[in-house]
Image (cartoon, rainbow, N blue to C red; front, side, top):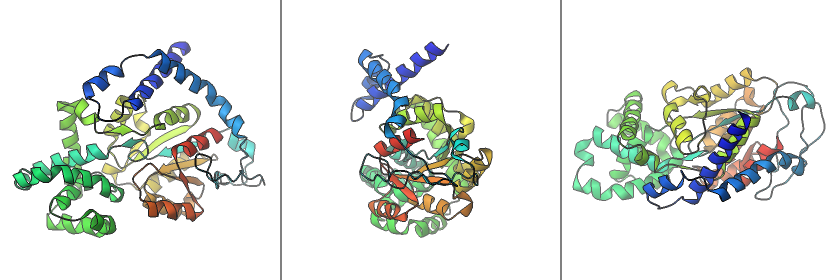
Length: 363
């Protein structure tokens, strides 16, 4: 039982280590073959990492602050260390003592695209496929095919302004027809409804088309669909640790079935489907999901990890969500001006992957 499960965890960690080392332009067949091997050295490395996990919190010597108690956390701001204003004092439980909070698992809500997975390549290619079906007379011309590589590359530049996946379909046509990435970055919130009206588009139809395009690609070539995605280095291991020690949820704009498949096939994580909350179909704001999670798990600490600064600002304005610690990751889809603003906010914590792991260890 337990020994078998621990062995499986170590083997899964080993596969992720090998997978991370194979990131880059390596043929998919070679990559698929190599990650099925159980490398002794990688297993040993994974075992050492797991054995160090429980000692990290003690080594950090973290002092937590809670309502009604005066202890403050150490202010450390260097890159790779804990951000200066972590943790926030609020625990959402009034004047409960430190012991009450310490006895409960923390709640962690993670965004997916831009936090766990870099899906920009797949999203751009899926959008091109969908746009080809929607506008064949526009996307099958020799001129369009000649511009495809440039458009797909520009999609990475404009990714920070995308709220929901279906918007990628509108973006690829805008870029194909000459809209500049700079203009889209500055004006996408007004540009999107204008172009949807111009081309007689509606949200639900685009959501259905984008999802069906992905489903068709997966059915025809699963490895080909997975290949443009990648798990950010260190994040899968962080999720492993969180899932053992805390209550973990995915709150995303990606459709849940795709999120679950990438976690299983690329991160080797068996994540419960009922803990993935997708906005794509429901349209439910992330702030509402956070409120629901806070009510489901009262009297503990809450952590929301995002790559979109605009989303965190919306949460910051909700007084009912004051108990949430907010984190903007520096490896996701955001730009420097947003990172600078987040750093100066006093509420939102800007974190790199090393700081993120340190925060996890601290709790």
